[in-house]
Image 1 (cartoon, one colour):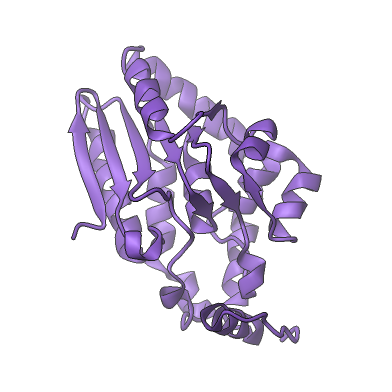
Image 2: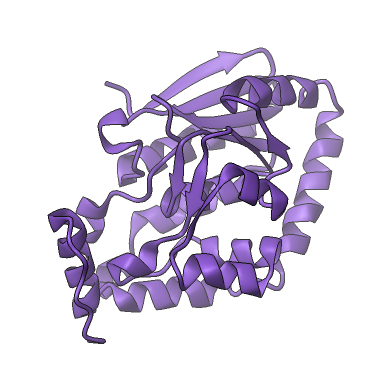
Length: 252
């Protein structure tokens, strides 16, 4: 079974995360495939935009903790996922995320890399990594901070709060809130985008991204994430998650 389903449409490409047994959790293979397809789409003048969505009613419920569980700080520093994330963020054309169901952890970070987020009515968004003894590692905390401000970002990053679609829309995380599933509205949006001047869209995106990210502490966030990979609390957090119990953190 393909973990990322790629569909070509006139002027745009659709990428569907397809690990329904894991609620589309992002493993290295999925990120590598996303990066590969988006790099190809970036080089293809016939493609003007891209859409990312998830199969079976969820966007992505986070990173694949089976890959993170045994990873050390040294391994995190050379993790190929960093390159895949960078390629996704560097996609120069409009990127739309259709978020239904869970968009948590790495899944929310992926959505935050999109230029436009369409939320389904049942969407649930959050950065609950502190429950695992970790923090967001792909720029999620920084991008959320820029969108919603420190008070609300603190609720989600430090408190691990998961918010519903209506709250996310009210906070300005997404500009579209569907009355039902996100995908139909997202597809209609991307069709409209493909009718606009492609070079102008790319130029506009480049200035928006540059303006967004100049003040973000992205390297600092990643370095802090990597340091935590060696902590005993990270190991306990993941064990507790697997055991469906509350973790007992010791600050080690």
